[in-house]
Length: 436
Image 1 (tube, rainbow, N blue to C red):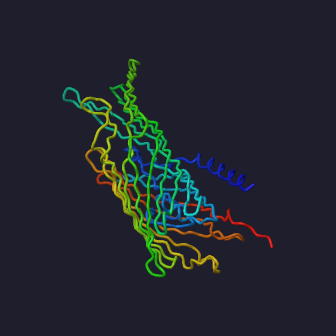
Image 2: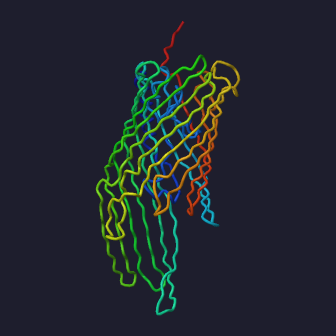
Image 3: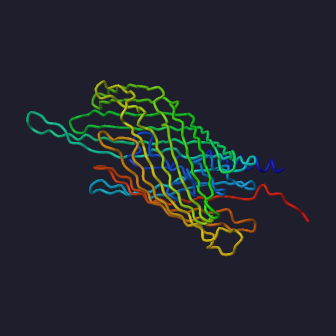
C-alpha cells in the first residue's frame, strides 16, 4: 500500500511538472541570445538574492548545487512549488510603459534514497522570450525635393527553454558531498521582424527566425562542511556545467511581398546545430550560527563568449554562425536568513518565521550591435512562514518581494517589481508508527 501511495503521488507530481512552462517576459532584451536567463533558485534562495551554491538545508530543495541533496532528512518527502507575478516599467528617454505578467515558475521534489544519498527531480525554467514593439523611420528624397515615406519595423517574439531534471547527492564521508543533475532541455522560439513601406512604396519584408531544441544538460556539484567551534558551521560549495552543442536547426524564412503587383518571393535558410550551452563555473560560501543565522555569498560565470550565434551576414546576405555576439556572464549574489528560535518544539509562532534578505548583480551575456547589453541589479526580501498543524510544522510558505533593474547606456531601462510565492511541503511520510 505504501508503494502504491508513494507511486501515485510521484505520478501526480510528474503530471503537474509536465505542465510547467518557462516564466513569461515582455522584455525587448529577450530577443537576444537564448532570451532572458531565468532565476533557477527556489523559495529559500530566491529571497536571498538567488543564493544556492554554498547553501545546505535539509528542509528545502536547492537545485543550484546537487551536492546539497544529501542533507535531506531520511523521514521526509519534500515538494516545492513556486509562482510569481511581476509589474515592469519600461523607460526609453521620456517614454514610459507599464506591463504585468504572471506565471508558474518551478516544481521540485526532494527525498532520501539511501543513507547519505538524496535525490531530486522536477521542472525549472532556463530562459524565456516574449516581446512585441515597433519603430518608425522617415526616408526618401527625389529631384532635390524631399519626398518622404514612412518605413515601419515591427519586432515580435515568443518562446523559451525549460529543463526537466533528476539529480543525486551523495555524502561520500562526513562533511564532503558530491552531486549531479542530469536534465532534458527542450524549447523553441519564433522571432519575427516585419518591415512595411507606406506612401509611394508598396513592399513589405518579413524575416522569421525559429528553432526547436531537444537536448541534454549536465551539472556537477560538491560541498564541504566544516565546524567552526560549537555553534558555527561553514559550508563551501562549487559547481560546474558541461557546455556542448544543442540539437536543433535554426531556420530563417524570408518573405518579400509587393502589394501593387501581388508578387511574393520566399526563401529559407538553415543552420544545423546552431545553438550551444556554455561551460559554467561557480563557487559559494555560507556561514551558519547556532542554526539561527545563515549568511552567504555566491559567484558564478558562464562562458558565452566562446560560443557562436546565428546571424545574417550583411555583406553576403547569408544566414550563418558568427562570433563576437555573445560575451561571458558574471554574477555575484549575497544573502542572509534569520530565524529567532530554530527549535521546532518551542512555543511561539513568530519565533519560527524566517526573515530573509539578499542582493545580486549580473553582467550581460550578449552585445547589442556595437553596444554592451544590459546589466542587472536585484534586491530581494521575504519570509519563510511555517504552516503549523498537529503533525509537524516543517511545511512552509515562502514569500518574497524582489526589485530588478535592467539597464544599458542609451538603451531601454527596465524596473521590475516581482512577488514570488513558494509552498514547500515537508512532511513525515516515512516514519514508522507504533501502537501501544
